[in-house]
Image (cartoon, helix red, strand yellow):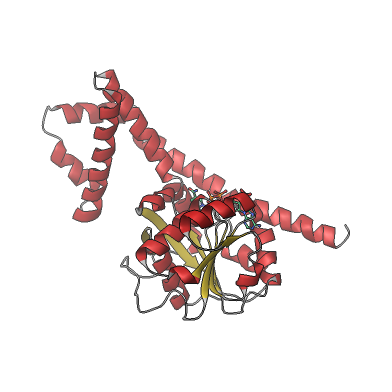
Length: 302
Ligand SMILES: NC(=O)c1ccc[n+]([C@@H]2O[C@H](COP(=O)([O-])OP(=O)(O)OC[C@H]3O[C@@H](n4cnc5c(N)ncnc54)[C@H](OP(=O)(O)O)[C@@H]3O)[C@@H](O)[C@H]2O)c1
């Protein structure tokens, strides 16, 4: 169940306190997207933002494009941060957590992770401090400001911390708080979801070509139809089956097409795809643990 109604967060809670900074560790695709969203929405002032990445070449390029400090040696900035967004790959989580700890992370700094499959429990134990932790699962349409992000809080994070996280992700789309137990399903449905939608759109565009439409036109028809249908579902609040009935005239072409989709078992194929992705999502978090276990074995000389 959502922790609270699906309403936008309260902007009474500032994302970071005055005099502190917001750091983004991992300035790749998602890190850059979130920085752009934060800058465009004005949720955080440019002077309060910085990023760190281990790739020096990428740092220079991103710093130039976003006009904020992006550094390989970001450790000195960690102690100034009121919020750190961790946007590295799951396998890099142990290294980043250890860097943050040894760089003097303040005890009240909120850590938000977007790492797929890495639980709040695991983040807390990798960090080894009592810092508040929020886990988020965004998706790539954040790039165009139409992202879908789900957030949950770890054991030391308060409702206010969750609201701060919501404000970050609302800068790039919608954000809903949800119990962590549902995160594997969320990863499969909205995290991986854009890929399913692209596949379906590609197949429909091919179908348009098959019946004689130029490819680019077919793709535009399909994409705009998907956008319009999505808005109908979100804005009307009606069940998709009821909206579908509006398009389906007796003995018309739509019912003929729908029956062909049912013959192809489209419902069970989609359900099985999400079921399989959920199963895989449940194992994604295993990698950081294995890495950190092998690191501690090495430290112990085993
Ligand atoms: N893309 C999606 O659809 C999506 C959706 C939801 C969640 N996520 C999550 O978002 C996270 C980031 O994904 P992404 O696609 O943005 O990845 P990405 O483009 O590879 O960006 C990650 C960046 O972090 C850098 N990095 C690695 N280790 C570091 C360290 N120790 N300190 C500082 N920087 C470090 C990487 O440098 P190198 O390239 O040199 O390693 C890279 O530039 C992943 O955990 C993923 O699970 C992604």
